[in-house]
Length: 152
Image (cartoon, rainbow, N blue to C red; front, side, top):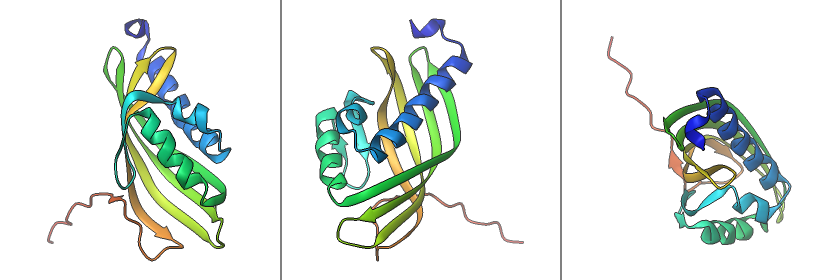
């Protein structure tokens, strides 16, 4: 029962899911990767994918466009929001070698809602936000919101 978990155990469990996400994606272990999501998840990386099966299909199609990937996660902040729920924000640098030649680099963050389901923490809702990229003219993903600087 997750209500028995300490806040520190929740943080570690969600962090493990985030790290598994990067490793499984980079290794193209698609079924294990898809299992990191709840059945009723929402994955917003461009056009939203709703449900684990849709996420798997979307990512399978994307993975075919890359010969190699390397995702680097940092600045992980996890906040417990209930006995079996938590929010997380983590920053990402992702390098991709394109199958058609060239490279794509992305700097951004993942904004997540996680649920404890079955035997582990799973991603229930993910929004991928970008701060910058290199290797494409445009990247149709959500942008990291920027506050206006105060006038001096």
